[in-house]
Amino acid sequence: MAEAPQPLYARLRDELRAGILDGRLLPHAKLLSESEMTAAYGVSRITVRQALSDLQKEGLIVRLQGKGAFVSQAQAAPQLNRLEGLAESLAAQGQAVHSKRLAMKALRAPAEVAAALGLAPRSEVYQLSTLRYLDRQPLSVNVSHFIPGLGERVARIDLSGRDLIDVLERELRLRVGRADVEIRAEAMPAKEAKLLQVGAGVPALRVQRVIRSEDGAPLQTENALYRADIFSYKLSLSR
Image (cartoon, rainbow, N blue to C red; front, side):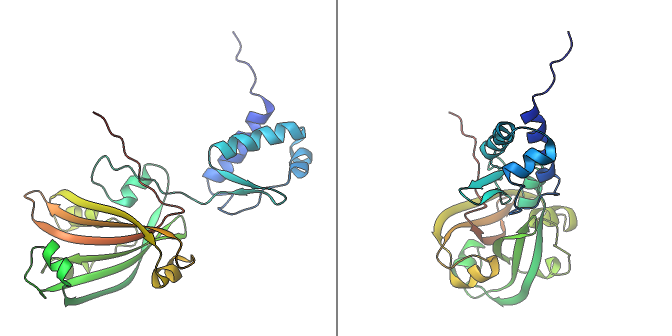
């Protein structure tokens, strides 16, 4: 039996979806108006509306009354089912994450960092600050601290497109076992808001982790502040 032809609205929807997913239509880009699409694609306005409705349900576009349809911002939603870096998790979803190093310096560990790393108060540690991007838009400000002897080695490595977990395992030959994670909502501080290009006080997500070796010894702490408008975690729970 011959396969039924694809409806016109589905063809238009698929063409627009492909343009969004392959980057030809960037986040915030304004789509053609309904009348412009009708003329450009030779279809009815009802067909255009049905195609746009499907894309809106998929979260790929937003439609604003009186303004038209726009490509949605990229959204980061990594799974929490296993320990992996953000870039590794999102690469599986076809999204690119890269980092800009803001600072790398030796300092005396704050009390909470020393406790998390199992160090004596005011032990010297290395602090790495980075700004992470999701598909060219600012996503998070990350501050990591490393146990003595580890930070100096990390400082010599290009981290622009890599996860720290990947660096620890592949470059430094350490065996990462698990992480202790704490997540909480808070208002965006002014300093981080400027880096992330959002308003101070908007919703933010604070994610704190202690990365441990296979034998449970702490290797690194990470304190990350994410834009809540484009970042969330997905969990799969069973009983």
